[in-house]
Length: 281
Image (cartoon, rainbow, N blue to C red; front, side):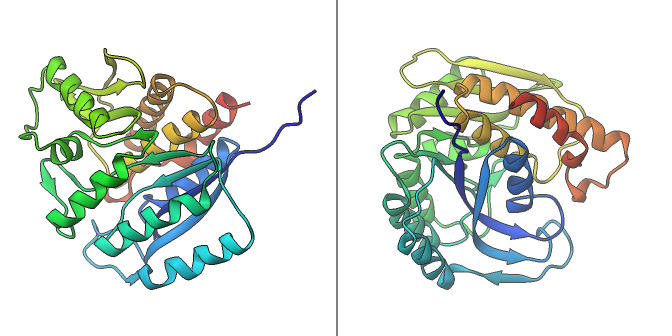
């Protein structure tokens, strides 16, 4: 019988101590999915920036020294997941890290955290957007929201009203940039949110549609990407990964509404981690 080997993934993102986002989401979710999560912090925050005040410590000048020790140990990973990158230098560092932490079988999942609701985050510049495109071009799976898909492809944004054909075109353009498979998250269709999945080698997209379970909350993109990455690295197809992630996010929002969790506190995914454990035997 073949010996079971646990997957391990390097997750490159910021660490926010409070508010349920970035690494404080990825570590427990991937762990529940039986994947060893090895964080590479890009910054340390007391809480996410949706709160009125926060502490912030930029980790850019430590990222190379940090990962140099991994190289000295000869570490490589089954997957690498990138999230929020706060500067041009950080994006360039990540691009330089990829070969040394990878094998021929390593899967790269890129969540190009650049903006939302049609607005580019204030930290982002045109030069950074171009560098993110270069990162997307080597991704095995890319998971932008609609805003980020529009920014990456130069498509005018609209809050609602994208046709299925337009959403397919967005996904096709991302794949033409080099991404092997694409999941575009959070396209609004009435009271539903639709995720667009275009898998490697396919010309037609699949659409994963979920009814809204409550108000939008910070960190849901991080939850979605963590579940999708975990499922994908465990051998599920991008479509299966998107379906599992969309269901989990919906259920987390619904549970957060039931418990009257403040919006800025994100989703109480801890309540539902058992579902992830059971779904990844």
